[in-house]
Image (cartoon, rainbow, N blue to C red):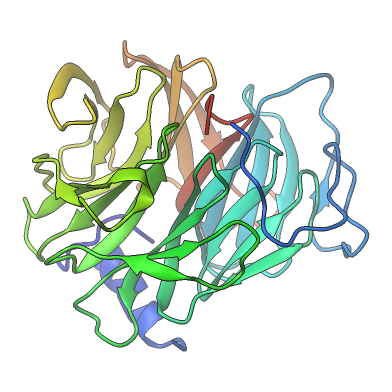
Length: 331
């Protein structure tokens, strides 16, 4: 899993070895058909893999990706009610994203799968000929961006693939100098893309790169130095929340890279993160889990621990990504 992308971390090395051994608000959704309209309704092509139950009344849903003895995406409510588990087609699911229609995007080993709201079978597959997808985001204009952990052609280079609305193949990519690992990517309401990268293999090599309006032109280092970069998400104030896997923190920065003074001590290395629609709760995947934790924001008080994989059982899974539906405003 993405416990750390640095070579010093055994879990990070396990993921690196695993990949090496394998072949190489109003978002639009490319190529989707037969979408479900509510939780519990499957697309016409769905099979019996996994399950999905309708929660009692309106609910904010949490998605958590896990892999190990099996590959699953768990679906829970904010109060911890376990309402679903997606398994069909998953192989080492990592980063997650939910769009405005409730479609779940899963960075899934050699592709990105898109599951309709409430569906158990993917209705779109984004191919990635460049590398292994590890995170995915969709900007408000419907363009999807997929982060490759590293490129198959050169394991010392990482990049972000660009998928225009309606396309299941990349039209190009985003790159940055000295980007050797590119585990996290996000988009803000204005369509700017941000990546948390490693510019080397040592503690302190973490950086945050901005690609204005999702374009290569104007790409810049925001001057944020991380011991080991974790998840990244915009918050409702127009700032960035960035995690550090060594510092065990989630810190808020302006989109120009200046710290705002708001920071949460997580107590554990936190990988993927998500923010509630009202901006008052942040969730993070606990690398020492397998579970995820929610905190009040910006106070940083721990609220709840969510445990993964009740239908799978031991051995424990590796957790990687988290997403919420409904997602953040404007994204």
